[in-house]
Image 1 (spheres, one colour):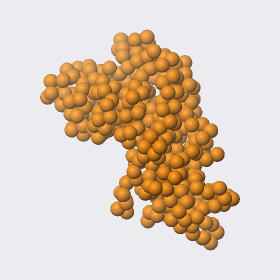
Image 2 (cartoon, one colour):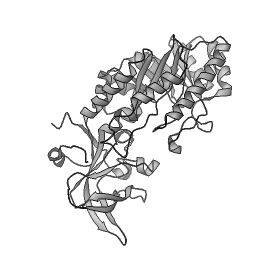
Image 3 (cartoon, rainbow, N blue to C red):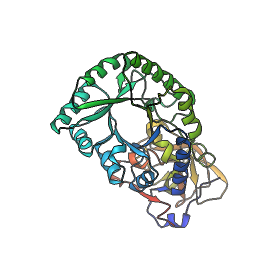
Image 4 (spheres, rainbow, N blue to C red):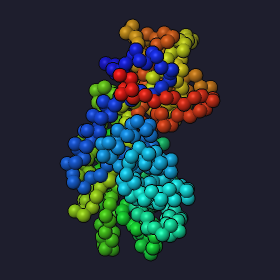
Length: 386
């Protein structure tokens, strides 16, 4: 079954471009809300790095989510879209001074801190402004995730976070500072996780660390477990909405949250992934020695995930009902890695056909580049193309 697209409208637009089905986005947000409000102390932030298209940000903000940002630019985008500063958290291993000052000026909810040098700079910059910054320490729990190595973030060998043996020391340092307020712990073990066992392992590790801190009579107000919930790339029509029920229930059952604590989540891909598709035109069909190539006007500059992560995206010829043939689907970029998929079964392809690369609403448009002096793809919503 192919996705439902306004083909006539697509033919009028310059390709490649991103198309966002806002009905899918709103249904996803509705389900997320219904599952998360079952638990009084669960708070969900949207990870802006997944997709910062302002039209999508506005819809997400309208549905009550906070914003998880990893740069000053993302903070600005979130505030411009109407997210209240009181719901903005700022993470990242390398925050520049201007970015920290921006967060301080807006009065964001929390800085997720990843090192003592960063903590010292936040304290210094806050003091200069006569402010006190809320901080949570990102602890590296050394928990592996069943996902691609490039998007695993919770192992001891990763650059992110503070090691568990150093946790007590960094908290002690923070408690002596006058311009930071230690309010919580932050964790994130990776992305595109479908095995709930990975999240259970994180819960067990957080429980251990909380018990250790309570033995020192240190109480944590907020626990932030990041995001990581994946989507079904192979069957975007069959499983449009991620399994929010099992995701939130896993934390409710396995994390020993105290009655006075708030549990924060930072979901990105799970929110926007399935609502987006990259739409491209076929430039040429080339007969190789042993295979056919469908050469598109979209390339790795528009959707880098297949080249960067060997990621799979379902590919559909949305303007053909002819018999199925096998193609290597490639782009025009002057790189051998500019390949979207090999031996892909598509309805017979001809020049001018429209091709949809599905499930690209996360880490698609936001990661596009101008390599080869190419223009960035435009993003359109279904609301605009009615």
